[in-house]
Structures are given as C-alpha cells and as structure tokens.
Image 1 (tube, one colour):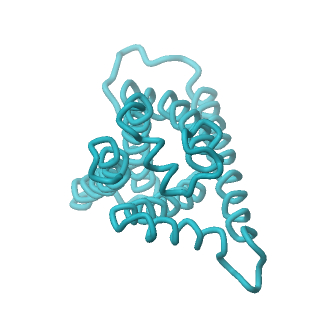
Image 2 (cartoon, helix red, strand yellow):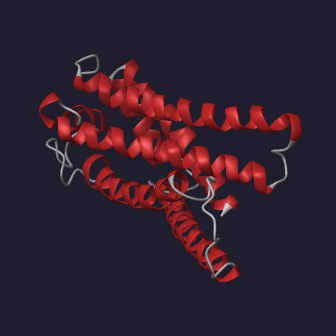
Length: 211
C-alpha cells in the first residue's frame, strides 16, 4: 500500500506542476500536453511512453484499493469483538470515512475527469479541441457544477493524502518523540500544497483569469 501510494503521490506532484502551465497561456499548456504524448521519441513511437505510465498508474490504483480492503479485513479478523469502551482514535470516525468513502468519490472523479479532459467525451470542446480549449470549456462559468465536483474531489484527495502520509510515517516508525509534531505538520503541508495547486486552475478558469 505504501509503495503504490508513493507512486500515486509522485504522479500528483507532476500532474499539478503540468496543470499550472495553463497560467503561461495556451501555447505553453498545449506544448506540455504534446510532450506527454511524444515522450521517448524517436526511440518510442507516439504515445507509447504515456500509455505505459497510464498502465502503471492503473495497476497502482487497483493494488492500492486491494491493499486497503485486505488490511481492513485483516484488522477485522484480528479484533472480531468490539472494544467495550468507545475510544476516540484516528482509526475511527474521520479517518475511516475519509479513506473509504473519499476513495469512492476520488475513483468516480478520476473516471469523469478522463472522459472530460482526456477523451473529450463529455467536454463541450470535444475530442477535436486542443487540451487548452478543453480545459477552458470544461471549467467554464456555466459549468459551475463541474468545478464544484472537482473542488470536492480534490479536497477528498488532500484528506486522503494527509492521512496516508501520516500513516506511512507511523508505519515506518518515524513519528515518535520530537518528530511527531513536525511530521504531522509535514503531511498536512504537502497535502495543502497539492490541493491548492490543483484548485487554482479550475477556479481561475471559472472566474475568467484563464480564458
């Protein structure tokens, strides 16, 4: 779970940096999108490298979900009888709802996101539109509900990431003593940066800064 999570985090960082190129204009953003499809040329043909990346990401998502289910089942078998007293812990309430139901929201969002901005199936600009045109059309003011869905999903990603990073620190035995608070702040800071980085572009399109 930690390995697949790390791969997905690295992807999120790269994806966020690429998205921010929208602030540099249509040419810069379209060049970035073109680079993703021509990576590895001339050694590799058009889109081969990107397809390999997509396959790896898909496998990581499936393995990440499988790991989560397996760990939940293992935990249930290890403690089949509930505690007599209720305890406030990160393993209950907020964390459980964020990781379980947030994961479902994120999965649905990824599917819609691909249909909208990658394949253009549900995007007003369609498949023939350039990546920049699909971006602007996808988050246009009249499609405020798409932006709202995006905001909710990205916040879920941030909460998911924050809990995941903190759990990883604990699992590795790093979160103890003096490192406890700094690492907890680090997990929150990384998540906040990614959330803000991803949200700036759709919000900028919706308010007309990017057009």
